[in-house]
Length: 86
Image: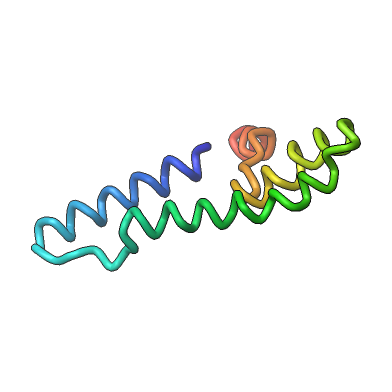
């Protein structure tokens, strides 16, 4: 979660700098980002449909493979805690 908050903070800082300089952001418009989200979710529809008959397999697939593909690898809090203890 910490990585996501740092990323959001860096993005906000760059946005403020762009605003102060009076330039437009090179980032794609929100419509394009929504389209990318649709692509990520749409990629998972066929594998989910294939596993629909086996509820246990579907649950495992959604929790592991879909989540990791759509959200990326989430930070491991245990690894962060061990770094802090060292």
